[in-house]
Structure formats: C-alpha cells, structure tokens
Amino acid sequence: MALIGGKKFANIEIQDYVIRYAEMKNNKKSAVVTHCDEYYIPKGVVENGHVVDEELFVKTLKYCVRKWKLRGKKIRFIVPDSSVIIRTIDVPADTADEELTGYIYFELGHSVHLPFENPIVDAISLGVIEDKKQALVVASSEEVVDSYYDFFKGERALPVVADVSALCQYRLFHHYGITNENDIYMLAQFDVKSASISVFEQHKPIFMQEVTIPYVPDTWKVAALSQGGILSKEQFNRDNVLSAISDIYTEMERILRFYQYTLRSGEKQVTKILLTGDHPFMDEIFEGMQMRLETPVQTLAPDKIQVAQDMEVDTKYYNVLGLALKEGV
Image (cartoon, rainbow, N blue to C red; front, side, top):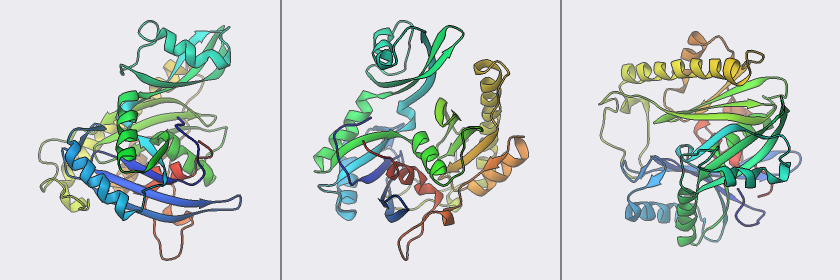
C-alpha cells in the first residue's frame, strides 16, 4: 500500500503495548541495521490496533519522534494484524488481472465479505484452476490506516508506506535464504497478546488468521507496563502462559488440516513452519511446537543479521527489519 514516493525510510511498528523503530542501510551487497529501539506504552492506550486514548498516544508518539529524530523523515509503518485480512477468492476466469482489485471492490457486500466498512484492497492473480481464477486479496481497515497516517503527519513525520507484518516477516526470512519456491510455509508470529498464523505458497501469502492467546485472569503477575517500561518473563505466570500457548498449537493443527484438505484438496501440505515473534517465552514456544507438531520448525538467528558496530538485534525487531527491506513504495 503506497501513499507517496520516497527513498530513505524510518520503519515503525505500533502494537497495543509497544512502538518499535528501525533503520537499515541497503545496497546490492548487504543490508546493515543502523538503528533500532522500542518504547513500551501503558495498557489501554491502544486496543486491538485502535488508538483509544488519543491524548496519551500523541504524548507517547511525540516522545518517540523526538527521541528517534523522525521529524521530516519518510515513514513506513505496519498495519496492525487485527486490521488485516489475507485470503484467496474465486473470481470469474475471464476477469483481467488488472481488473481484479476493481472486481473485489464491486463485489463487496455481495459475493465478497470483509470485516471492515471501508477496506483498502489489493488483489493479484494466483492463476486459473478448474475454470475459476483465484485472486489473492489483502485487505485492511481504511479507518486504522488513515488514523496512523494522521498521527504521524501531526508530528511532522511523513508516512509514505503501509505494510503487513506477515509480509515483512517473510521478506526477512527470504532475504536470509531460509525460504524457497518448492516448500510451503506456515509463518507463526507469537506476540504477547496474539498469534498471527499465515501460509505462504511460492512466496505468496494465501491465508492469514490472527488468534488471541487465551490467557486466564492474572497471567500477568504485575500491574500494566509503565510508560517506557520493559517486558520480561518475570511479569508472567509461566504455567498460565504455557497452558494458553498450548491452545494456539491446537489452532495451528487445525489450520494445517484446513490448508491441506480444504484449500488444496489433500494434494499439498505445509512442509515447514517459520517461527518468529516478540513473546518473552519464545524458547519455550519453539520447544513446544517441536514436541506437538510433526512439521519441522525453523527460526532466524539474530546473529545472521548484519548490524552497525556496537549494536545488537533481537527477534522482537524482525517486523520492522523486514519492513526496512521493502523495495520501492
């Protein structure tokens, strides 16, 4: 989703509990991370991707813009997963590729149903199968995209590109040679509040679902994060977390079967799982997935990522690093 043109970018992710930022120097030979940082925001400021406390959000964003020197810079930002839908839709076989997006807009509320009143839609052809053309549809909430655009503009930053976290993550894995056209990948992104599960076939996303992690009350041991605080394992009840995560494995098993038997009629199946995210229990999640699921699980080690001197990166920055690798607008 391009808004206006530009060459150099700061890359921003806003989740319900944190704002993350990265910059990267790209050339044909290498990509080097030059800046990355994060700032945690209190509970209740952003809920399910929507800003609900504008006064405190603006105060927080103003601090980040000043700290990271974003004023006057071109900004790429990630649309919250709760405001994104990725799915494949059958369209008439004679629909021209360049007319797919227009066809989807025309059919909204009729043969095509999306959970947003005014969606922003991109569509590309996946080819013709049994006299029907399959279209890959990526849709997001215009209300949410426009609100973040306005917040950045209000702080005199220049929002130019909105992207989707699953595409950012896959782009990062692909850049470091972990993906290929032959394997079919499930991308599992575990954040603190939810897991985003998507399936990629020949480097294209064909399915995405966000699943809320079903924590029981009092899973977080301490009060909500103070502004600018940090997040660690000590703030969680370990047993409650691992029990809730087990429910996500069940949902992943269901999606694996859905892809194999419903979407691909038993002819194809996911061959590898790519695990990523910012959850404090990522090591335990990796071990749990290896024990529970038969499909091999892969991760991207942070030491593979080239950084400027005296810098370190962690998996929690992978969304904005994948966004930094985006070419063009």
